[in-house]
Image (cartoon, rainbow, N blue to C red; front, side, top):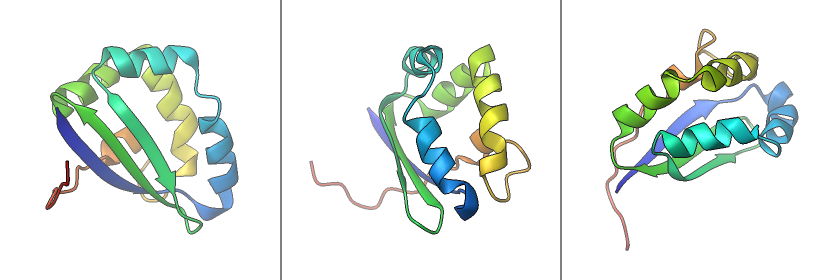
Length: 105
């Protein structure tokens, strides 16, 4: 299982609403993530809007492609787009994996 970490930037003035939306993620979105191979997926935020995402998957590119092929992801991304800085309306395309340099198992 590959560990993937990524950074995004939520608009600070929308951060509270972003957190509220993630407290009630649509059940069909959760099912799609699982079906596409996303495991142990977490999002963390800092007060200035920095968002850190972490997930585990066998194949990150396949997991991204699996989500891109779903209708529920298109709806979710359209709703989430206004929350992010500098992503031109495509938050899922801004998820560039960071390079892992250490892991303690």
